[in-house]
Length: 333
Image 1 (cartoon, helix red, strand yellow):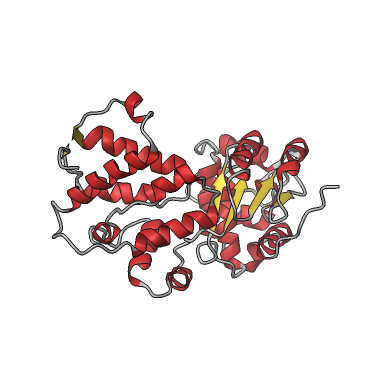
Image 2 (image 1 turned 90 degrees about the vertical axis):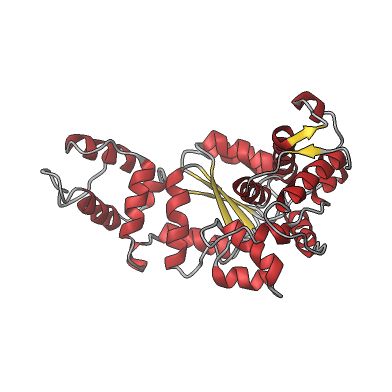
């Protein structure tokens, strides 16, 4: 590495790199992306084109990115004695979650100075970086992460269709005394039932943790596409009716709509009577009152503010949370 010349990463770039390397994402994908971006942007000599980086072996990519990160840290921190205990914990974690081949292992077997990176972090950081701190300083990082609700290590993945589920399901779980962040549950909204299938297929062949798939009631065909690739640890739940909004308690929706319309001239009616599904009802409700356009994410955020207790949990949501707590092996026959 004697002939290497670099442009040091800024503190912000170093923190972003640590963040991206510890997110819940396919190991090979995230490490290659971070390593290559660092090399392209901050390696002055030797200079590589993107096409040339694509041809380099993973071990060389790792060594180059590792060197740039560690040399950049020296700009801001005094050099410390080598301590790779965090690296080993990250390696063990990634191997526990994903199926990793020998080539990808070369990306993981790095000597990045995580102990130095951690010293750049303040308190206002995402959960994965808070967890990274526990890997450095805690004798029992998994317990501390559970107690503090840092979500990592990820132990279960939920794949759902939309943003409403992603916003509200963790909140309903909390009311039922099952905090997703304490139990290492990652939820991903795929953006539609067809995307759920694609997302599940992407993870199915290279993930070791249980996957829970949540589908709307009209997704029977997608259910059948997913079923052959389900592992015994996995589970599919199809809603009993409609979309996620259709199984929200009516009284919770009424409470939310009164809250949303308290400052407009046409307030909430006394009773909700959806005939073509709750989403269609909500679209018409906001349009007819001259309020803002109905948007699922915004409405889900309003619902979240109005959840006050167990009375706001429908029986179906209780069933979903119980299935997450106690996975049932599905019969494919």
